[in-house]
Image (cartoon, rainbow, N blue to C red; front, side, top):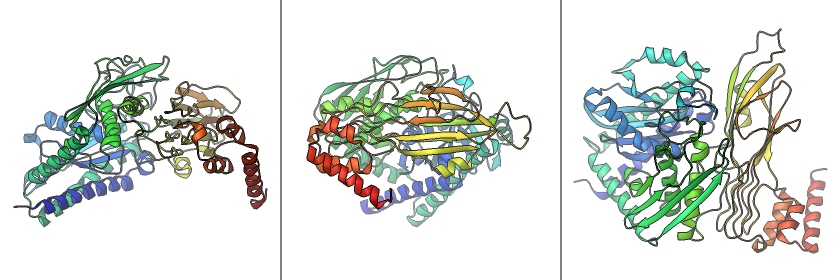
Length: 569
């Protein structure tokens, strides 16, 4: 009989296996969004399609949504039709991870001729055809190529017809096809390591170890839930939307052995592509609750099960086919702050203030200028860049500057972005005064200025929120800075949608900051001075929010003067 110690070792081994699986994807992917930003997920499942372990590398939206998707693969393909050497694929928003730009690949894992489980992974694809990555579509049919759950590799034979269809429908065929093969390869790495583990521990199947993992995970999660006050509270947030503001509403109920999140009252489906399939809503609502209540318990089917998430059909958080969903993340990333608005009433001094929430992404579609009738060397290019605003201040700490919460996606380096096409990042720096004042200050957003090479014009697809609804503070904390986007000639731009940028023009983006926590007058005086000296907060804003004395202002001015002298300014 296998001991508990051995099962724990196997559990840790499985976590390391899926982490290696994720790192293999990072190292083999063609897209910069995967290689540089980590916009991916990886996990291992038992033969029933229940997630046993997930990689640390990756996003909660991907992995928590993918936790439901393997069951769809099993139902669609059927176990009797699964063979060694198979690889399955889809980008179905409702049976995958929420939009067509995420491709999910599932590989059955056989040991000694028997199916023992599955490896699954997801990655964001820079282009999937259609209108391109943006909010402008009126239905999912306009948003790109749809790949139903099907075999990418059948008994070792690659589906060349599928590859031809993909290549014929996307703007970056080599990149997309390369990413699909990278997804299949990383699953194979996971399978090899699983076989090694099963041989080492003389296992014939994974049922016993998955039972051990699930029993311990569920028990630990229920202990955390049952230690909470039995209460029901409501949370609310209003956000930008596309043409009309959107209300997000949640009723959070802590009950015995479960927590219910009901999004009844939330605004209806939007005409444009910012709608959210329920699987993605579940992913981020569960993530918010786990972060606050049971962060140390590994993510798997059992640790997620006690969190029940519902939303009425037809609301923006439970959009049904064929609603456009390309930018489901812009709304979905704001779900945790909505949940925390309710949880803060149940667990005071636990959750952070509101942050930027949504990733501040943009995609640039570059083409030779219409005025360029000479050069034939210039080519079209698609460049996607992930960026972050500031996170909200925490009950005992400042917010994090330019850090993505809740997605955890990393900011893409300038060098990697400029390598993918004729785009120039002229400026990229922290945005002073964008973090909301408070006892603990909100994290700073960024200022980014982009343009193109001479001879090019481009369409920029913006995917921003917090233009009209900046992050709100808690316990007296002040709001974070709002998003502001314009051209370098001062022309205002919309926060969402595809917009033309003429040759020679640049786009200036002031990304949002996180909100403050606690009353500003309670902030540590040394922290106030440090913020001004570092350039995070201007003297003017410090005077405005922190009631500085003449002596403190003199100290700050002297420190700034000394810093300028040491830098030779």
